[in-house]
Image 1: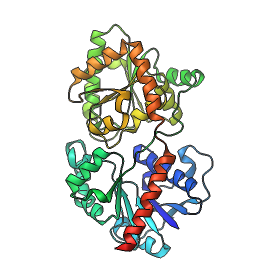
Image 2: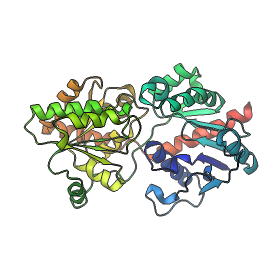
Image 3: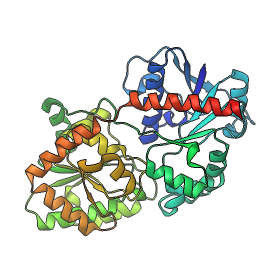
Image 4: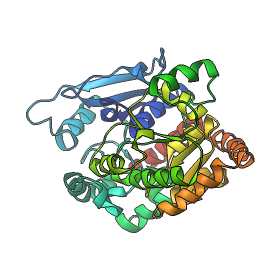
Length: 381
């Protein structure tokens, strides 16, 4: 059996969906050695290395297929990919980043990670909102089955895209295996290089409005006013879109000298910060799943997170929750937890137990079962 996965998320610096695509592909291939898996993408995009997920070796049944495109076939979802699927004899295609081919002769699985483009359009560029509203519902109706990471998003898809719940399967993501408590000799060089001496708060996210980092910056300023602790705040992640309000907030706050914006970091650097932060704070106003809090928990960090449905579902009692609309509520949460060592130890222990319940092997097992269901439904129709 030949199974294709959307390789486009791997042609750029990997963030959440890129890591999802890479980890899932490797786990699937390892679990099903009798099947062939390939990352498919148009050749006019940058090439990528299968080992880029941190592994020096990859399963022999996992490959990369850059498909040569021309004037017509560069219209990837409507012409290029459907033509390739038809010619190659592919048995199933998994669109790991919302998109699937608009026509074809094989069952399709669509991963819808969240509905932020529908529910929070003000946090995205207008062109992306227009495209999503034009194509996402169309592709969702076309897909044989849909995968999403939480029951919260499953309900949103049913309500907003008007689909039967029987078409949608909830399969959780997982923190990558590299995220575990790091030894001191790996932590200290990273902290020195980034200027993170002493206690620091940490957040990890692409810098864009949905991540609610302006609220975090305001809360951090208030924390410094009320606390005697010489804290710093580390904001880790690449610059996304509509990010000017955050940098304007940082520029005007008297706490700006204690805010470190690191940009994108390697997994090793990120692991070192997760493992040594005083608190990990995730103030997002909307998420489909929420991997960074789980990654932080896997490294032993006590976590403060927004009280939104997906995060409550994912990290449950292992985090301290706050109202993301209130920087005052976040300020109180940070001050209370920063001053309570016993509470931090309890959250750290709960977080390690919670994160251990998730694995990419389990995610791949559930995904393979959905592939089988997609094949049955496609051939029955």
